Amino acid sequence: MAQSFGHHPSSVAGCTKKLEWSVQKVTQAAQKLPENWEEQCEMSVSRKMYIIKEEDIPPELYANSDQTHVVYAPGNTLTWAETGAKQVSLVGTDKKQTFTVMVTVASNGTLLPFQAI
Image (cartoon, rainbow, N blue to C red; front, side, top):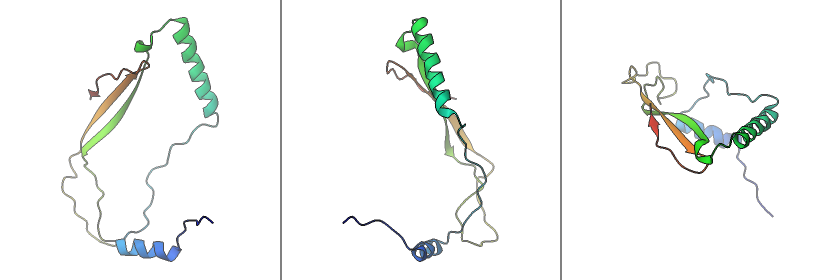
């Protein structure tokens, strides 16, 4: 018979107490999908298939790009400190070192050079 994984609330409480963690307020909401997201995706794919076929667009000219934000020195105002601390200091909060990388792949599998912005 398979055993299921479980935990006792007191063991979780003991762990968070030992780590001196406490519950924090969420500061931003998660994104939500529209009700008809599946229909929108199907319509988007159909439009793209039609245009690619009718305009004879070669695979190497149809590309997908995405960009990602890269932080290499966060200028954050959050840090770890003892729960209940009245004063928490942090060095370097005035500077945030980041850049954006754009990645593009053609539908024939060609990975184009990254663009750092």
